[in-house]
Structure formats: structure tokens, C-alpha cells
Image 1 (cartoon, rainbow, N blue to C red):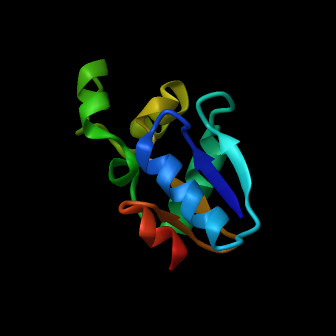
Image 2: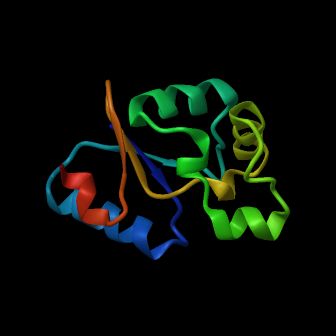
Length: 108
């Protein structure tokens, strides 16, 4: 499992602590240091069964002037260019993924 982690985010730290306490075998990816590319975001959206707007942090997007009414392709490119817009934390499994909001959802 891959854990998309932002160590500066309290929810991301809480999620990581829960997964570690549960003994889950995870690989941590600090996505701000190693951003997801377009293909990875598309694969993530498929695993989440969500559209790009569902995984964008709206407050940060508005601060950057991102048009939240843009089509999916443009929103994905915004996520590629601005990885801080990605909702967090996210746990990616082989065939599915889940957004850890609240962090306890990661244990499902």
C-alpha cells in the first residue's frame, strides 16, 4: 500500500500513526517532494471512483486562483502543477484507494 503523506498536515500524521499502530505494511510517498504525474492521478481517480474536483483542496485552489469549474483534464493538470492541492491523506491499495477524512477511514 502507498500512503500519500504530507508530514506538515495533522490529519496526514494522524492517519500515518493509525496505520502504523495497526501494523499495516505501507510505503510512504511524500507527494509534495515527489508529485504525482497525470497518469498517476488518473489511476488514483479510478481507484477512488472520484472526479478531480473531489480530491482538490478547495481553499488552497481558490488561493491559487484555480478555476474549480474547469473540465476534468484541466483540474488534473492543476493537481500535477500544484501538488499541495491534493486532498490528504490518501491510502492507495492494489485495486482501490481511500481518502483519510477522517483519518479513521484509512482502516476500512
